[in-house]
Picture 1 (cartoon, rainbow, N blue to C red):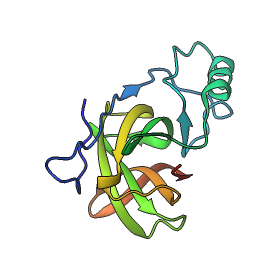
Picture 2: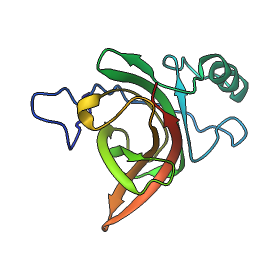
Picture 3: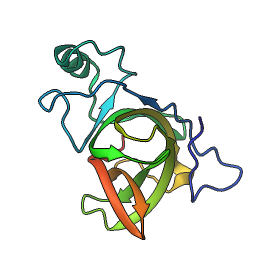
Picture 4: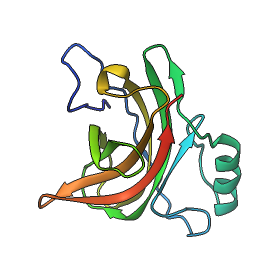
Length: 157
């Protein structure tokens, strides 16, 4: 599935998103609701909360990987509430205060999901810069209001 950057120029690649919805509800201690966790690679099958914690400890990273003119970002988002939509967005804001909008990427998902895992490729041409901090939110607009399901702050290498 492809992510669509709203601000990207037609010739720029917006990014590749492989959205995987984890089918099993996760207990609160293992699944930090409302958080996005960056990963080195995709999580494998989850058999228990302990298995989830073990995989996250092994795969968790603090920054996406810089590759050429962009960044590869693998993440899992533990939503505050189920997303009752076929698509959610990864919304990127400049800084830690999330006041200046930078870009948005669509992520296909299943209605009612509470956990989203995705891989995304973001580029300099998407308005991002190395060394800058960004607030990332998994969210969607409903009635003109942003509903935030999960968020984190990252600094791009």
